[in-house]
Structure formats: C-alpha cells, structure tokens
Length: 195
Image (cartoon, rainbow, N blue to C red; front, side, top):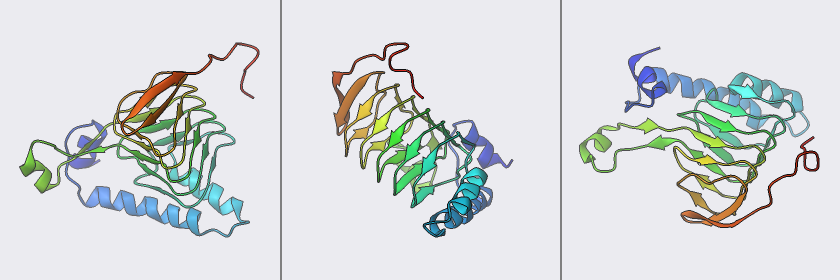
C-alpha cells in the first residue's frame, strides 16, 4: 500500500495519486458490469457486487444504476436494500446494517476537504470519515448523509434531508440539516423480531 492510500485508510489528510486512481478505475469496471447487465441478468449483477463490495450480506439487493468510489469499503448487511441511482462515496468505510432501506438517489458521502486552510484545499488535500447506518434504518429518496455520521437503528430519515450529525435510535428526522422530529416506538422482543 502506498503512502497516500495508507494515509487515507488511517483517516488522515491525503492527496490523490496513481494508486488511488487505479483502485477507482478497478471499481468502475465492476460498476460497468453491474449497471450495464441486461434487466434479466441477475447473475452478472450478483457477481459484480461480490467482487465489488467489502461485505455483501445474504439477501442484500442493490438496484442499478449504482455508483461508488472504491466498493471494498462498503459493508451491506443481510436483507439490506439500495434503490436506484444511489451513490456511496466510500473513501472511508460505509456500514449499512441488516434490513436497512436506502431510497432512490441517496448519497452517502465520506469525503472531507479543508474548510479554513484554503491553500491545502487548493492543493487537493482531503480526508474521509466513516458512515454507519444501523439495523432497519430507512433513508427516504434523495437523502444525503455526510462524513462521520451514524444513524441509529430503526430510525427514518425523510426524503431530501441532509444528515450532518448523528441521529439516535428509534426516531424520525428530516430537514437540511436533518433534525429529530419525533420518536418512534421501540421494538418489542418476540413481537417485532426481524425475519
């Protein structure tokens, strides 16, 4: 692993280089296989996802067109569903819990650029922070999740929201930036067990 890839993996400031560009091109080749497969060719899409993702849970489903940066930094839980036109900027790990639902056009964006250091931003420095979606989370259509955000289990994010800070378990949040609107019921053991 080269210096910049190592810095990226540690969550430090890094510069793009030939190795990182090669990794993204390798990812895009698998995305081409996935996104260009015939509508009835589930086997091609499944093979591409298995080569692409860091972890692909049993029964997880991703609809085309799907885009990501590296692929191998994505962990998609059992029974998770990603609707069409989602973009996962997985410069840092993106962990999607079991049975999570991600609406069409959602964007999970791990990259950060310098805000106050204009010279470093001009030079192209960036770093990344992980995103975690808990079990049974639902992101509505066109939700954007920012770097370093964790969304708690069983929480729902309203369509079009921009999530820039952590969201607790069992709530509905919406807006830009997303704010908690209300709590939801807590699942009852034995009554609401997931299949």
